[in-house]
Length: 509
Image (cartoon, rainbow, N blue to C red):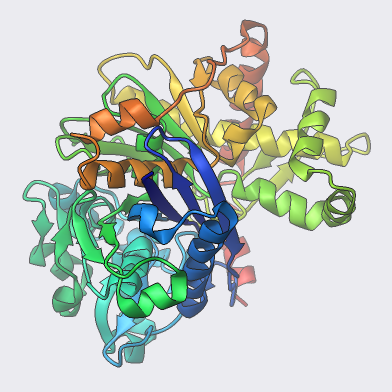
Protein backbone atom coordinates (compact mmCIF):
# COMPACT_ATOMS: atom_id res chain seq x y z
CA UNK A 1 0.00 0.00 0.00
CA UNK A 2 1.25 3.49 -0.82
CA UNK A 3 1.61 6.29 1.70
CA UNK A 4 2.45 9.96 1.32
CA UNK A 5 4.58 11.81 3.84
CA UNK A 6 3.85 15.43 4.70
CA UNK A 7 6.28 17.54 6.73
CA UNK A 8 5.09 20.78 8.31
CA UNK A 9 7.67 23.17 9.76
CA UNK A 10 6.01 25.78 11.91
CA UNK A 11 7.68 28.47 13.98
CA UNK A 12 8.23 26.26 17.02
CA UNK A 13 7.02 22.76 16.07
CA UNK A 14 8.02 20.29 13.37
CA UNK A 15 5.49 17.62 12.36
CA UNK A 16 5.46 14.58 10.12
CA UNK A 17 2.23 12.89 9.08
CA UNK A 18 1.55 9.89 6.86
CA UNK A 19 -1.58 9.64 4.73
CA UNK A 20 -3.00 6.92 2.53
CA UNK A 21 -4.53 7.42 -0.91
CA UNK A 22 -7.93 8.22 0.61
CA UNK A 23 -6.50 10.98 2.78
CA UNK A 24 -6.72 9.00 6.00
CA UNK A 25 -4.17 10.20 8.55
CA UNK A 26 -2.42 7.03 9.66
CA UNK A 27 0.24 8.53 11.90
CA UNK A 28 1.68 11.77 13.26
CA UNK A 29 4.93 12.59 15.03
CA UNK A 30 5.89 16.05 16.26
CA UNK A 31 8.85 17.69 17.95
CA UNK A 32 9.27 21.14 19.45
CA UNK A 33 12.13 23.37 18.38
CA UNK A 34 13.26 26.23 20.54
CA UNK A 35 12.36 29.78 19.62
CA UNK A 36 15.35 31.95 20.46
CA UNK A 37 14.33 35.46 21.48
CA UNK A 38 17.65 37.27 21.81
CA UNK A 39 15.90 40.60 22.41
CA UNK A 40 12.38 42.07 22.03
CA UNK A 41 11.11 41.70 18.46
CA UNK A 42 13.73 39.09 17.49
CA UNK A 43 12.66 35.45 16.96
CA UNK A 44 15.21 32.93 15.70
CA UNK A 45 15.88 29.20 15.61
CA UNK A 46 18.92 26.95 15.33
CA UNK A 47 18.91 25.63 11.75
CA UNK A 48 20.80 22.47 12.68
CA UNK A 49 18.31 21.71 15.47
CA UNK A 50 15.52 22.26 12.95
CA UNK A 51 17.07 19.78 10.50
CA UNK A 52 17.58 17.22 13.26
CA UNK A 53 13.93 17.69 14.29
CA UNK A 54 12.77 16.88 10.75
CA UNK A 55 14.86 13.72 10.72
CA UNK A 56 13.52 12.77 14.14
CA UNK A 57 9.83 13.13 13.25
CA UNK A 58 10.24 11.27 9.95
CA UNK A 59 11.91 8.38 11.74
CA UNK A 60 9.37 8.64 14.55
CA UNK A 61 6.25 8.42 12.37
CA UNK A 62 7.66 5.42 10.49
CA UNK A 63 8.46 3.63 13.75
CA UNK A 64 5.12 4.48 15.41
CA UNK A 65 3.04 3.33 12.44
CA UNK A 66 5.21 0.38 11.48
CA UNK A 67 5.06 1.51 7.87
CA UNK A 68 8.06 0.53 5.80
CA UNK A 69 10.06 3.21 4.02
CA UNK A 70 9.51 1.07 0.91
CA UNK A 71 5.84 2.08 0.99
CA UNK A 72 6.45 5.85 1.15
CA UNK A 73 5.73 7.08 -2.37
CA UNK A 74 7.14 10.55 -1.80
CA UNK A 75 7.65 13.50 0.51
CA UNK A 76 6.06 16.94 0.49
CA UNK A 77 7.24 19.75 2.75
CA UNK A 78 5.53 22.93 3.84
CA UNK A 79 6.68 25.55 6.28
CA UNK A 80 6.04 29.03 7.51
CA UNK A 81 6.54 31.68 4.87
CA UNK A 82 8.58 34.84 5.21
CA UNK A 83 11.49 34.73 7.67
CA UNK A 84 14.97 33.87 6.43
CA UNK A 85 17.17 30.75 6.34
CA UNK A 86 20.66 31.30 4.93
CA UNK A 87 23.15 28.70 3.75
CA UNK A 88 26.77 29.82 3.75
CA UNK A 89 29.65 29.66 1.32
CA UNK A 90 31.33 27.39 3.90
CA UNK A 91 28.43 24.92 3.43
CA UNK A 92 26.97 25.56 6.83
CA UNK A 93 24.10 27.73 8.08
CA UNK A 94 25.24 31.36 8.00
CA UNK A 95 23.53 32.11 11.31
CA UNK A 96 20.37 31.17 13.18
CA UNK A 97 17.28 31.07 10.99
CA UNK A 98 14.89 33.98 11.41
CA UNK A 99 11.24 33.03 12.06
CA UNK A 100 8.28 34.79 10.46
CA UNK A 101 7.28 36.46 13.74
CA UNK A 102 10.50 38.51 13.76
CA UNK A 103 10.04 42.29 13.76
CA UNK A 104 13.65 43.58 13.90
CA UNK A 105 13.43 45.15 10.43
CA UNK A 106 10.25 47.14 11.14
CA UNK A 107 11.91 50.45 10.21
CA UNK A 108 12.66 49.32 6.63
CA UNK A 109 9.04 49.01 5.38
CA UNK A 110 8.27 52.33 7.07
CA UNK A 111 11.17 54.01 5.29
CA UNK A 112 10.28 52.41 1.94
CA UNK A 113 6.66 53.55 2.29
CA UNK A 114 7.77 57.11 2.97
CA UNK A 115 10.31 57.41 0.14
CA UNK A 116 8.09 55.86 -2.55
CA UNK A 117 9.93 52.54 -2.79
CA UNK A 118 6.90 50.50 -1.73
CA UNK A 119 4.78 51.92 -4.54
CA UNK A 120 7.43 50.94 -7.10
CA UNK A 121 7.74 47.50 -5.51
CA UNK A 122 3.98 46.90 -5.56
CA UNK A 123 3.86 47.61 -9.30
CA UNK A 124 6.18 44.63 -9.81
CA UNK A 125 5.48 42.17 -6.99
CA UNK A 126 1.81 43.06 -6.26
CA UNK A 127 2.71 43.03 -2.56
CA UNK A 128 3.08 45.45 0.27
CA UNK A 129 6.32 45.02 2.21
CA UNK A 130 6.42 43.34 5.61
CA UNK A 131 9.19 43.55 8.18
CA UNK A 132 9.38 39.75 8.39
CA UNK A 133 9.86 39.23 4.66
CA UNK A 134 13.33 38.10 3.60
CA UNK A 135 13.90 41.27 1.56
CA UNK A 136 13.57 43.46 4.66
CA UNK A 137 15.62 41.05 6.75
CA UNK A 138 18.38 40.92 4.13
CA UNK A 139 18.50 44.71 4.05
CA UNK A 140 18.79 44.67 7.86
CA UNK A 141 21.58 42.07 7.74
CA UNK A 142 23.47 44.09 5.14
CA UNK A 143 23.44 47.07 7.49
CA UNK A 144 23.87 45.26 10.79
CA UNK A 145 25.62 41.94 10.13
CA UNK A 146 27.79 42.50 7.05
CA UNK A 147 29.84 39.38 7.82
CA UNK A 148 26.67 37.27 7.56
CA UNK A 149 25.53 39.06 4.42
CA UNK A 150 28.77 38.46 2.53
CA UNK A 151 28.79 34.75 3.44
CA UNK A 152 25.47 33.92 1.75
CA UNK A 153 25.53 31.06 -0.76
CA UNK A 154 21.77 30.37 -0.85
CA UNK A 155 18.77 32.36 0.34
CA UNK A 156 16.16 29.87 1.53
CA UNK A 157 12.67 30.00 2.87
CA UNK A 158 11.86 27.60 5.71
CA UNK A 159 10.71 24.50 3.83
CA UNK A 160 13.15 25.04 0.95
CA UNK A 161 16.00 24.75 3.44
CA UNK A 162 14.62 21.44 4.73
CA UNK A 163 14.20 20.12 1.19
CA UNK A 164 17.80 21.15 0.45
CA UNK A 165 19.03 19.12 3.42
CA UNK A 166 16.96 16.11 2.30
CA UNK A 167 17.97 16.19 -1.36
CA UNK A 168 21.16 18.26 -1.68
CA UNK A 169 19.37 20.26 -4.43
CA UNK A 170 18.97 24.02 -3.92
CA UNK A 171 15.55 25.02 -5.30
CA UNK A 172 13.18 27.92 -4.67
CA UNK A 173 9.51 26.99 -4.86
CA UNK A 174 7.09 29.48 -6.41
CA UNK A 175 4.43 29.80 -3.72
CA UNK A 176 7.00 30.74 -1.09
CA UNK A 177 9.27 33.00 -3.10
CA UNK A 178 6.34 34.79 -4.74
CA UNK A 179 5.16 35.62 -1.21
CA UNK A 180 8.56 36.95 -0.23
CA UNK A 181 8.73 39.99 -2.57
CA UNK A 182 11.43 38.33 -4.70
CA UNK A 183 9.29 37.71 -7.80
CA UNK A 184 7.74 39.93 -10.39
CA UNK A 185 4.22 38.47 -10.34
CA UNK A 186 3.53 39.60 -13.90
CA UNK A 187 6.49 37.70 -15.35
CA UNK A 188 6.71 35.04 -12.59
CA UNK A 189 10.47 35.45 -12.48
CA UNK A 190 13.09 36.99 -10.24
CA UNK A 191 13.42 40.69 -10.96
CA UNK A 192 16.71 42.58 -10.65
CA UNK A 193 14.79 45.83 -10.32
CA UNK A 194 13.11 44.55 -7.15
CA UNK A 195 16.44 43.64 -5.61
CA UNK A 196 17.80 47.05 -6.56
CA UNK A 197 14.84 48.82 -4.94
CA UNK A 198 15.49 46.92 -1.71
CA UNK A 199 19.23 47.64 -1.90
CA UNK A 200 20.16 43.94 -1.95
CA UNK A 201 21.28 43.36 -5.54
CA UNK A 202 24.23 41.34 -4.26
CA UNK A 203 21.99 38.35 -3.39
CA UNK A 204 20.90 37.77 -6.99
CA UNK A 205 23.20 34.79 -7.49
CA UNK A 206 22.17 33.34 -4.12
CA UNK A 207 18.51 32.94 -5.17
CA UNK A 208 18.06 29.26 -6.11
CA UNK A 209 16.42 28.10 -9.36
CA UNK A 210 12.62 28.19 -9.22
CA UNK A 211 10.43 25.09 -9.11
CA UNK A 212 6.70 24.40 -8.81
CA UNK A 213 4.89 23.00 -5.80
CA UNK A 214 4.14 19.61 -7.30
CA UNK A 215 7.17 18.90 -9.45
CA UNK A 216 9.72 16.40 -8.17
CA UNK A 217 12.47 18.75 -7.04
CA UNK A 218 14.96 16.13 -5.85
CA UNK A 219 15.43 12.75 -4.21
CA UNK A 220 16.44 11.79 -0.69
CA UNK A 221 20.22 11.43 -0.55
CA UNK A 222 22.08 8.50 0.99
CA UNK A 223 23.32 10.74 3.80
CA UNK A 224 19.83 12.07 4.60
CA UNK A 225 18.34 8.57 4.38
CA UNK A 226 20.67 7.34 7.11
CA UNK A 227 19.50 10.12 9.41
CA UNK A 228 15.75 10.05 8.78
CA UNK A 229 14.93 6.45 7.89
CA UNK A 230 13.54 7.05 4.41
CA UNK A 231 14.92 5.19 1.42
CA UNK A 232 17.54 6.96 -0.62
CA UNK A 233 15.97 7.96 -3.91
CA UNK A 234 12.53 8.72 -2.43
CA UNK A 235 11.04 11.61 -4.48
CA UNK A 236 10.63 14.99 -2.79
CA UNK A 237 8.28 17.51 -4.39
CA UNK A 238 8.79 21.27 -4.41
CA UNK A 239 6.29 21.59 -1.57
CA UNK A 240 4.62 24.83 -0.65
CA UNK A 241 4.13 27.76 1.67
CA UNK A 242 2.12 26.34 4.60
CA UNK A 243 -0.85 28.61 3.88
CA UNK A 244 -1.11 27.07 0.40
CA UNK A 245 -0.83 23.60 1.90
CA UNK A 246 -3.63 24.35 4.38
CA UNK A 247 -5.80 25.76 1.60
CA UNK A 248 -5.34 22.55 -0.39
CA UNK A 249 -5.87 20.48 2.74
CA UNK A 250 -9.20 22.20 3.36
CA UNK A 251 -10.33 21.66 -0.22
CA UNK A 252 -9.81 25.14 -1.65
CA UNK A 253 -9.54 24.61 -5.41
CA UNK A 254 -11.90 27.32 -6.66
CA UNK A 255 -13.07 30.82 -5.78
CA UNK A 256 -16.20 29.91 -3.80
CA UNK A 257 -14.81 29.69 -0.28
CA UNK A 258 -12.40 31.42 2.07
CA UNK A 259 -9.67 29.65 4.02
CA UNK A 260 -8.80 30.83 7.52
CA UNK A 261 -5.79 29.47 9.42
CA UNK A 262 -5.66 30.15 13.14
CA UNK A 263 -2.17 29.07 14.08
CA UNK A 264 0.80 31.23 15.03
CA UNK A 265 -0.32 33.52 12.21
CA UNK A 266 -3.77 34.85 11.47
CA UNK A 267 -4.05 33.77 7.83
CA UNK A 268 -7.11 34.76 5.82
CA UNK A 269 -7.11 33.92 2.12
CA UNK A 270 -8.91 32.96 -1.04
CA UNK A 271 -7.87 32.21 -4.60
CA UNK A 272 -8.71 33.94 -7.87
CA UNK A 273 -7.37 34.01 -11.41
CA UNK A 274 -6.20 37.63 -11.29
CA UNK A 275 -4.26 39.42 -8.53
CA UNK A 276 -5.85 42.30 -6.63
CA UNK A 277 -3.97 45.34 -7.90
CA UNK A 278 -5.68 48.25 -6.11
CA UNK A 279 -3.54 47.87 -2.97
CA UNK A 280 -6.51 46.95 -0.76
CA UNK A 281 -5.03 43.62 0.36
CA UNK A 282 -1.63 42.91 1.83
CA UNK A 283 -0.46 40.07 -0.37
CA UNK A 284 -0.87 38.49 -3.76
CA UNK A 285 1.22 35.39 -4.43
CA UNK A 286 1.22 32.39 -6.74
CA UNK A 287 -0.95 29.47 -5.58
CA UNK A 288 -0.13 25.76 -5.78
CA UNK A 289 -2.68 25.50 -8.60
CA UNK A 290 -0.74 27.50 -11.21
CA UNK A 291 -3.78 29.16 -12.79
CA UNK A 292 -4.66 30.86 -9.49
CA UNK A 293 -3.26 33.63 -7.34
CA UNK A 294 -3.54 33.47 -3.55
CA UNK A 295 -5.06 36.64 -2.10
CA UNK A 296 -3.98 37.02 1.52
CA UNK A 297 -4.43 39.15 4.61
CA UNK A 298 -2.28 38.02 7.50
CA UNK A 299 -0.31 38.85 10.64
CA UNK A 300 1.29 36.83 13.48
CA UNK A 301 -1.67 37.53 15.76
CA UNK A 302 -3.62 34.29 16.12
CA UNK A 303 -3.53 31.14 18.24
CA UNK A 304 0.11 31.69 19.19
CA UNK A 305 -1.31 34.16 21.70
CA UNK A 306 -3.30 31.35 23.27
CA UNK A 307 -0.14 29.24 23.55
CA UNK A 308 1.44 32.14 25.48
CA UNK A 309 -1.61 32.32 27.75
CA UNK A 310 -1.31 28.62 28.57
CA UNK A 311 2.46 28.62 29.05
CA UNK A 312 2.66 31.80 31.12
CA UNK A 313 -0.62 31.88 33.07
CA UNK A 314 -1.54 28.20 33.38
CA UNK A 315 1.74 26.23 33.66
CA UNK A 316 0.73 24.45 36.86
CA UNK A 317 -2.68 23.47 35.45
CA UNK A 318 -1.07 22.09 32.30
CA UNK A 319 1.39 20.02 34.36
CA UNK A 320 -1.35 18.73 36.66
CA UNK A 321 -3.61 17.73 33.80
CA UNK A 322 -0.75 16.01 31.98
CA UNK A 323 0.09 14.03 35.13
CA UNK A 324 -3.54 12.86 35.36
CA UNK A 325 -3.82 12.05 31.67
CA UNK A 326 -5.94 15.11 30.98
CA UNK A 327 -5.80 17.62 28.14
CA UNK A 328 -5.30 21.35 28.68
CA UNK A 329 -7.16 22.26 25.50
CA UNK A 330 -10.28 20.30 26.47
CA UNK A 331 -10.15 21.98 29.87
CA UNK A 332 -10.03 25.42 28.25
CA UNK A 333 -12.96 24.53 26.01
CA UNK A 334 -15.00 23.82 29.16
CA UNK A 335 -14.01 27.24 30.52
CA UNK A 336 -15.38 28.89 27.39
CA UNK A 337 -18.68 27.08 27.98
CA UNK A 338 -18.81 28.62 31.47
CA UNK A 339 -18.22 32.23 30.35
CA UNK A 340 -20.81 33.16 27.75
CA UNK A 341 -20.49 35.75 24.95
CA UNK A 342 -22.82 38.16 26.76
CA UNK A 343 -20.43 38.50 29.74
CA UNK A 344 -18.14 41.51 29.91
CA UNK A 345 -14.54 40.45 29.53
CA UNK A 346 -11.47 42.60 28.89
CA UNK A 347 -10.58 43.56 25.34
CA UNK A 348 -7.52 41.55 24.33
CA UNK A 349 -5.17 42.80 21.62
CA UNK A 350 -3.41 39.68 20.23
CA UNK A 351 -0.17 41.47 19.45
CA UNK A 352 2.28 39.49 21.58
CA UNK A 353 4.54 38.79 18.59
CA UNK A 354 3.57 41.50 16.11
CA UNK A 355 0.54 43.42 14.92
CA UNK A 356 -1.65 44.15 11.93
CA UNK A 357 -2.34 47.75 12.98
CA UNK A 358 0.96 49.35 14.03
CA UNK A 359 4.51 47.97 13.67
CA UNK A 360 5.22 48.40 17.39
CA UNK A 361 1.83 47.53 18.91
CA UNK A 362 2.00 45.23 21.94
CA UNK A 363 -0.33 42.60 23.37
CA UNK A 364 -2.75 44.03 25.92
CA UNK A 365 -5.69 43.28 28.18
CA UNK A 366 -7.87 46.40 28.44
CA UNK A 367 -10.60 46.64 31.06
CA UNK A 368 -9.62 44.07 33.70
CA UNK A 369 -11.62 44.30 36.94
CA UNK A 370 -11.47 42.54 40.30
CA UNK A 371 -14.26 40.24 39.14
CA UNK A 372 -12.26 38.80 36.26
CA UNK A 373 -10.71 35.35 36.61
CA UNK A 374 -8.37 33.45 34.34
CA UNK A 375 -11.48 31.99 32.71
CA UNK A 376 -12.61 35.48 31.73
CA UNK A 377 -9.15 36.24 30.37
CA UNK A 378 -9.29 33.08 28.28
CA UNK A 379 -12.48 34.24 26.61
CA UNK A 380 -10.77 37.60 26.06
CA UNK A 381 -7.92 35.82 24.25
CA UNK A 382 -10.28 33.74 22.10
CA UNK A 383 -12.41 36.76 21.20
CA UNK A 384 -9.46 39.05 20.51
CA UNK A 385 -7.98 36.52 18.09
CA UNK A 386 -11.35 36.16 16.33
CA UNK A 387 -11.67 39.94 16.05
CA UNK A 388 -8.22 40.25 14.50
CA UNK A 389 -9.18 37.62 11.92
CA UNK A 390 -12.38 39.55 11.28
CA UNK A 391 -10.45 42.76 10.63
CA UNK A 392 -8.34 40.97 8.03
CA UNK A 393 -11.37 39.25 6.53
CA UNK A 394 -13.27 42.50 6.09
CA UNK A 395 -10.41 43.79 3.94
CA UNK A 396 -10.42 40.60 1.88
CA UNK A 397 -14.16 40.63 1.30
CA UNK A 398 -13.97 44.08 -0.30
CA UNK A 399 -11.85 42.59 -3.07
CA UNK A 400 -14.24 39.74 -3.87
CA UNK A 401 -16.80 39.80 -6.65
CA UNK A 402 -19.05 37.14 -5.06
CA UNK A 403 -20.07 36.44 -1.48
CA UNK A 404 -18.26 33.77 0.53
CA UNK A 405 -20.32 30.60 0.83
CA UNK A 406 -18.34 29.13 3.71
CA UNK A 407 -15.04 29.60 5.55
CA UNK A 408 -12.80 26.56 5.90
CA UNK A 409 -10.90 26.72 9.20
CA UNK A 410 -7.48 25.16 9.83
CA UNK A 411 -4.87 25.53 12.57
CA UNK A 412 -5.14 24.94 16.29
CA UNK A 413 -8.51 26.63 16.66
CA UNK A 414 -10.08 24.16 14.24
CA UNK A 415 -9.68 21.40 16.86
CA UNK A 416 -11.93 23.26 19.30
CA UNK A 417 -15.70 23.05 18.81
CA UNK A 418 -16.17 26.11 21.03
CA UNK A 419 -13.64 28.21 19.16
CA UNK A 420 -14.96 27.18 15.75
CA UNK A 421 -18.46 28.20 16.87
CA UNK A 422 -17.11 31.52 18.13
CA UNK A 423 -15.49 32.19 14.76
CA UNK A 424 -18.81 31.48 13.02
CA UNK A 425 -20.70 33.73 15.44
CA UNK A 426 -18.22 36.61 15.12
CA UNK A 427 -18.05 36.40 11.31
CA UNK A 428 -21.75 35.43 10.88
CA UNK A 429 -20.63 33.08 8.11
CA UNK A 430 -20.84 29.24 8.15
CA UNK A 431 -17.59 27.45 9.01
CA UNK A 432 -16.27 24.00 8.12
CA UNK A 433 -13.21 22.04 9.22
CA UNK A 434 -11.55 18.93 7.79
CA UNK A 435 -11.14 15.48 9.28
CA UNK A 436 -7.38 15.74 9.67
CA UNK A 437 -5.28 16.86 12.60
CA UNK A 438 -2.49 18.21 10.40
CA UNK A 439 -4.07 20.12 7.53
CA UNK A 440 -0.80 21.49 6.17
CA UNK A 441 0.77 18.04 6.05
CA UNK A 442 -2.37 16.76 4.30
CA UNK A 443 -1.99 19.46 1.66
CA UNK A 444 1.59 18.30 1.10
CA UNK A 445 0.48 14.67 0.86
CA UNK A 446 -2.14 15.68 -1.71
CA UNK A 447 0.63 17.34 -3.72
CA UNK A 448 2.78 14.20 -3.56
CA UNK A 449 -0.09 11.96 -4.67
CA UNK A 450 -0.58 14.12 -7.75
CA UNK A 451 3.16 14.52 -8.44
CA UNK A 452 3.90 10.77 -8.49
CA UNK A 453 0.96 10.15 -10.81
CA UNK A 454 -1.44 8.39 -8.45
CA UNK A 455 -4.01 11.05 -9.30
CA UNK A 456 -4.32 12.82 -12.62
CA UNK A 457 -4.39 16.30 -11.08
CA UNK A 458 -4.36 18.23 -7.83
CA UNK A 459 -8.11 18.72 -8.21
CA UNK A 460 -8.67 14.97 -8.35
CA UNK A 461 -6.34 14.36 -5.40
CA UNK A 462 -8.14 16.99 -3.31
CA UNK A 463 -11.51 15.46 -4.21
CA UNK A 464 -10.41 12.03 -2.99
CA UNK A 465 -8.23 12.93 -0.01
CA UNK A 466 -9.95 15.94 1.61
CA UNK A 467 -12.86 15.08 3.92
CA UNK A 468 -14.97 17.98 5.21
CA UNK A 469 -16.55 17.85 8.66
CA UNK A 470 -20.08 18.97 9.49
CA UNK A 471 -20.85 22.63 8.86
CA UNK A 472 -21.00 24.97 11.87
CA UNK A 473 -23.71 27.59 11.44
CA UNK A 474 -23.51 31.06 13.05
CA UNK A 475 -25.88 31.79 15.91
CA UNK A 476 -27.85 34.94 14.98
CA UNK A 477 -28.65 35.56 18.66
CA UNK A 478 -25.02 36.59 19.26
CA UNK A 479 -24.65 38.80 16.19
CA UNK A 480 -25.41 42.12 17.94
CA UNK A 481 -23.30 41.36 21.02
CA UNK A 482 -20.23 40.43 18.98
CA UNK A 483 -20.66 43.48 16.77
CA UNK A 484 -20.58 45.68 19.88
CA UNK A 485 -17.48 43.90 21.18
CA UNK A 486 -15.76 44.12 17.80
CA UNK A 487 -16.45 47.84 17.51
CA UNK A 488 -15.00 48.31 21.01
CA UNK A 489 -11.94 46.28 19.97
CA UNK A 490 -11.35 48.64 17.05
CA UNK A 491 -11.86 51.74 19.20
CA UNK A 492 -9.31 50.49 21.73
CA UNK A 493 -6.81 49.97 18.91
CA UNK A 494 -7.39 53.49 17.61
CA UNK A 495 -7.05 55.02 21.07
CA UNK A 496 -3.65 53.40 21.69
CA UNK A 497 -2.11 54.27 18.34
CA UNK A 498 -0.05 57.13 19.76
CA UNK A 499 1.72 55.18 22.53
CA UNK A 500 3.38 52.27 20.71
CA UNK A 501 6.50 54.01 19.41
CA UNK A 502 7.33 55.37 22.83
CA UNK A 503 6.79 51.93 24.34
CA UNK A 504 9.10 50.40 21.74
CA UNK A 505 11.84 52.89 22.61
CA UNK A 506 11.65 51.72 26.23
CA UNK A 507 11.69 48.06 25.16
CA UNK A 508 14.86 48.56 23.09
CA UNK A 509 16.83 50.07 25.97
